[in-house]
Image (cartoon, rainbow, N blue to C red):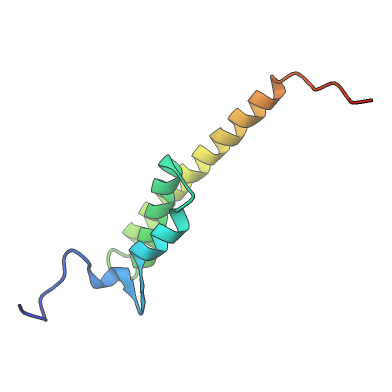
Length: 94
């Protein structure tokens, strides 16, 4: 096997010394689910590689995922607040 061959599966733009982007993503998103995990993972991916791969294009992709994450968080907060308004108040204990 040629050691100089480009690694298309695990390219250098995802490696930072002893850290790899996939390991950071795994740790950061371990308690997230659904779109929150997906958006967070993509933000990390594009932010960590922008200056090694696609430049401003990757920053714009990161921004798109960040905006999407913010929108979903705001929707969830509004949904929770709406549910709290529709919940009858508990009688005060005497």
